Image (tube, rainbow, N blue to C red; front, top):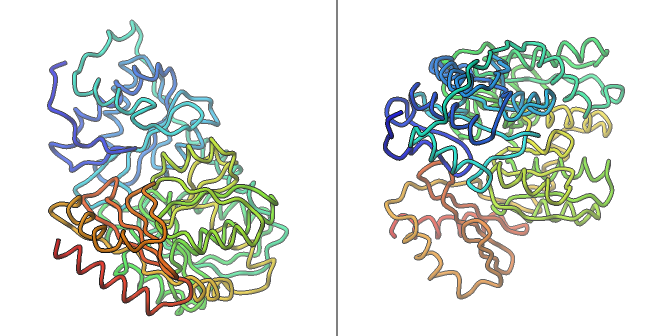
Length: 460
């Protein structure tokens, strides 16, 4: 094939690009063929989200895989975590989910794993796949192309795997509102809910924006955006739900609202899940990202566990779980990783665990979170579009670094002071600079420092 210019859709640990020049069917074919050749893959799991472009891009990926001699286990419409699960369940050589998750309408992408659902990054094959897709220097295909095998039965196996995290007998009656955002979550959730009903789970679900619709009539499913949260918050109050869960487009992230309709920031969910797992596995290791850390570290220390920090991003968190044997890892961006789920992230396992926890303790989600918010207030992530991220970070460092008690450059710049800290980092996937500020019990200080640093970034 004719070489093409460098592919800008390859990011630090996945593929995302604007439809047209950055990502199209020809590029998708090249990626599929390169994936099979670089990994020596004979069987590859393939799923896709509900965006209009995902079906044709997935078909192009499948052609590339089969032309390279690989059989394709086709999940059809599914979530990213279903691809992860099926890759291990079927002992496939890799897995690909065609998805743009929460990116704008004119984007699409892919999330890819190796055998055993292990992450792909530049050191483990991503750079080689990119180089081969760009050059088009593919090996001659086999005499017999690979075959495409529709694999709808994969979902039932996935549901059983996810429900293995839950003690159904511990559940008490709960009313849970679920907002799929018209993404891929609806059908998979229904399969889980059906299996729960068969087991006698006393859960009542209220569904909203449930049908997959790639035109996203209610907006791109990204509950992390403040402007997207009121629709779920208001529905919680209107329905009198015990709590709500909302997903992004490929449902590898989930977001919580308490019974008062308040959004639960991701770092407090990380602490909550860490507490759950340390009760199940005393002394276990918990992985967290560097952006907002004090609440999680406090929870882990109080439960006599071990907290280890990892660079932000799913490839890094997954590898950290594998390297350390950690039982759970979480990011404030609402990615939650589980040792017993191939060290991968899931947007379905967390709400099941929260339902069980509330049942066991007989309390509300607000009861569990409010004291943590008061003890460790945080700013929420603030994003900046800047012309020169390096210059902006340098300007902030010049002002604050000389006075810091500790500096950590694991991911971006983290500076710690007496009673407060902040992390400033460039996004791995978008042209943004991200700021997080936290304190020990002083919300006013968080607001003051957030404004001070934001002004410096804007003026840099």
